Image 1 (tube, rainbow, N blue to C red):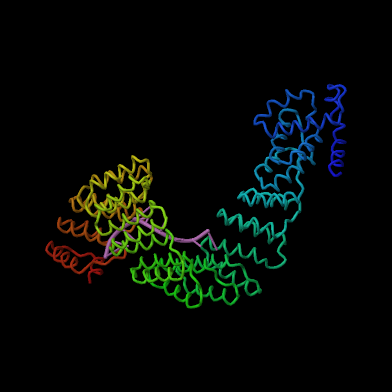
Image 2: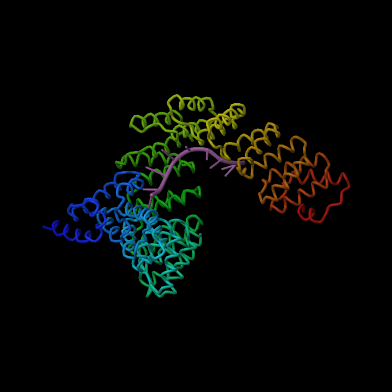
Length: 579
DNA sequence: GTAGGGTTAG
């Protein structure tokens, strides 16, 4: 019954549209004929990839440009993307100009489908002015699609016509701006909110986004101040807002603030999640002390059940700070609690065993891991390779490296870099250089760490020219050497007796705002002393003091005896330093 | 959304 009614409704539209077609077709029933054509056109546009070429030739007398026909097509097709494509075709081939209602319907359908770019293309139609409510939905659509700049522009144009979107629409956009890192737009939008008067009082969601924007801009304390303000109003932001503040304060090493926030959370019954603690423990372990371990134990005492991820993080942290025994205890503890180690957990534990040089146990764990069905990977291999290198076992590391290619495990940049580093430390420069070439031949893009150990070693063995060649190679690849790489070159030049160039390099380094190591100054002063280059010594000493270094007593002695032998007049600056 | 391999120098 319903379908009958619908059909009747639809066919009544057709009556006006099909005169041309039906006169061509003679005695056919008009309505049926039109429905048939509509169906056929819909099918063709739905199924034929290049329907644009066939439509006009197949229906030469059909009146495509009637706006009602487009609406019928859209309703029948129920596919806003196809309708848009059809609309573009009608416009360019049939001189069709869509009316307001067609555009309205299609625009809303596209926005509902989340197709912000498609919806945007409709705005180019000259006579189309979307309804304000449609534009508000469009803002949400743009925001969800990450097109925050466009969304902002729509806010601005709505403001011009005096239409005020809801707080919730503003919030959707604020979140979107945060996600794409546009805190500048967060502030602009907020200003807009304030001016418009949309905020009758505090909106806790809005405030949460502002706090996150502060954190993203490393203005954590401002975020914290805002938090306190909103708490005084009796409102409490969600967990993620607290987490952002905690992450921010961890980054700044402000652990008293971190613990303040934790207390606030607990007092507001906004219980810190496992993620919150993860942030804290991670942050604490980066300080290379046992503070993170203490927080972890404290948590367990308070009845928290750490998950696999947290155990893995803490085990890794403990290995890093040299508390391997504690790491091992945790490994057994987690297994005892029924948590099954996964490849991440295995890997940190293997890393720990490698670090202390227990390769027998490392191997055992490795095999256990494989036995449990975890695939051997470039990560697990690299862990073992760098572990072996750490203990000078470069031959074994190399054989593992070859084993990888036999097993078809692709070697990546990090695996090459680990081995290059290990070989350089062992003094195996030729093999290390070969690896660099192999890395390049594989089509991998080298990183700073691919070059650093090689340059260091070349300087140590006195091949400054070779080191400079690699530096140039880095430069050509737009790779910025770390500061110490320059230290090696300067010391290398000293050892070569090339003191003038060494000093020049030192001056360059300072002009690049890089801090040379104390040792570098000492080497240079020592070499200059031996060559009796007193004026240069004074220059270098001055630079050294400016960097905040002081002279070691042994160097003072040799300097003083040298300078007095030369009957040298001590400048005040130097005297002050020496006394 | 969270966790695993290389990167200074000691």
